Image (cartoon, rainbow, N blue to C red; front, side):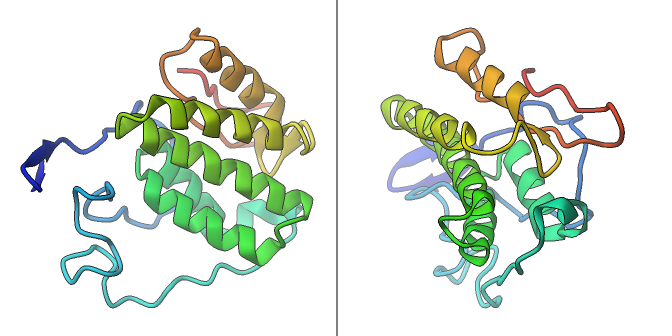
Length: 185
């Protein structure tokens, strides 16, 4: 728990702690919650204070398995480090070009991470707007892209939007021929 400005907030918890990890990188020491926990880079108590700003490199979409930044961003998202995943995906978005298919894809992941954070912080209207924006962007990428069954993810997001699932779905990556993780639980 963190105490700030007379507000006590529990940290978000992963929806599925047993979810597979895709990167060996350790998680930050806490999940950043704007206005409630130390800013990771600007506050001397921040989990990334004094560390150089990451500069993810551009990579071909077909080489997604070789990008530890991408894999780590997915891990951060799935384990409720939404602000941190947003930062990783934003770096990848800038590297890939904002108007490319890959850039559009990364922007959708940014929006989904931000939606999770907004929902946790109690702003359901903003969360729903961001989920909708993420859906719109995902409709403009191939049905299977960078290890994600985009069609399945879109179906789960749309089901969430109409109240079938209480949570924004997790993101599973293709672990080999014919094995896409289930994203709706």
